[in-house]
Structures are given as C-alpha cells and as structure tokens.
Length: 307
Image 1 (cartoon, rainbow, N blue to C red):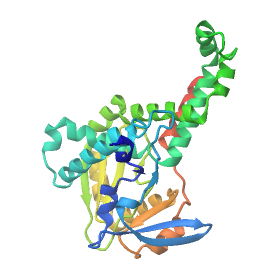
Image 2 (spheres, rainbow, N blue to C red):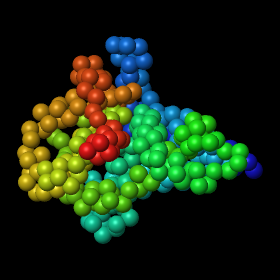
Image 3 (cartoon, one colour):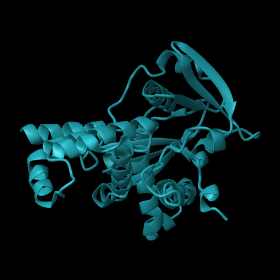
C-alpha cells in the first residue's frame, strides 16, 4: 500500500481536542471569522475540520513518505498527550507532579500554541533568512572552503538560488526544535499551575491567539493564561502571591477582560459555545494584535546584534 495515502493532510493549528471543549451536544462549536472586511460571519463547525489548513506543516522538499513527519510524528502525538494532561489538570490530579512525561507534554503544548499558527510560520521563515544574512561573513568563509566547481561563486548567490521549498524545509526542522526547547520547557514546567473555574453566567472565548502571556517566563510576576473551556482557564505563575491575586479577581470582569484580549488578538477565527458573546466579538475582533513569540525573538535578536 502507498504510505502517502495514510499521511494526515489536514493539519490543526488549533487542535481538535481543544476546540471540542466549546462544542455542544451535537459536537459543534460556533466559529466567527471576517472573510469580508468589517463583516463578522458565524458558522457551526466540527472541531475535526476547523482550526487548521491542508498541508500546513508539510516539508515539500522531503520525500513523500516523510513530508508529513512534523504533523504525524510530532504534532499529533503531542496533542494526544496534552489532551491527557488537560484531563489531569482539571481534576487536580497529583499525577502531574509525579509524571514528568505528562507535565512536559502540557508545557510543550503551551509552547506549540505560541508557534504553530500559519502566520507564526511566516515570521519564523523570515527570521531565519534574516539570521542567515546576519551571519553572512562567517557563512561566506565556510561556503568558500567547501564550494564545488559547479556551485555559485558566493554564499549570497547560493542563498538566492535556493527554492522556497528548501527554505521552508529548514523552517520546519527549526520549528520542531523550538517547540521542544528544553530551556523554555523547563521554565514553564517549574511554574505554579492551577485551573480557575468560573461560576455564574460568564463564559470564556478562545481564538487562534488563545494564550495570554508576555514571554518573560522567569520573571517574578509573569503568567501564562489559556482558556480550556467556556467555564475554566489554565494559569501558570511563579509565586503564590500572583496566584492569589488572579484568583481574587471578580470573575465576570476577569473573563470579560480576557475575552476582549483573545478576540482582539484573533487573526482568522474566534470560537465560542454559542452566539451570546457576538457583540463582544464584533467590537474586538482583530482590534488588539499581540506580539507573537517569534516576533519577540526576532526583535530580541536584532537588539542583541546591534547592541
């Protein structure tokens, strides 16, 4: 049998297990988008066919039987284990403190949500090319020492001759390493984790920008917030005082503020349980773009290289 027929072709950047937490009894959730400028369109969708793109993580420069390796060999197993970790989180199961595999899977999942959206990939590709250019003197020397008789005369010319598929292939390999970054993972692993459950009528939204953080994971007052369903949010902090402060916020005001940020940062989609928060979504959709992790890292490298 041809192995390529078994490869996953629809790649979720917002995993189906995560979207499903907003689904009703019919298995569908409400998806809001803006396909036409200033016009919100709402649609009932299944998590299996939403929050993704065909061939998003495909390495087009690789052989057919390995072109989907990032999705089938990394993303799918990561999401499966993260789904198990989330069940333990909600139950406050002490297994998360004993099973490093589950805890690391959840940290890796959080990191992936900061890196796996389509525009994240574009930023990473641009950043990598920029990094190549910055290192050009060293690369020129290394290239000259190994250049073959039929190769372009300079590394700059060689870089220009590379196809978009080859650049993308490099990006795909870097993306996997970044989502499995041991230092960032360790910082998140060592934060205090808790789930805040919400009583009353307030409900969380989610979107293709579901995480609220400012990336300084080691900072004393840092935090990571991720809605994990209409009535609960995962929170990671570095001290008890920050945890107590977050737990003390008025639930409706806290949820409303987070929803405004989540909808405001949305690029393609906002997801909800129903139409109840459509007015908030219409007011905020895409109105408050947030710096992505890759934009933050590229900016950091620029400052470091020019400092």
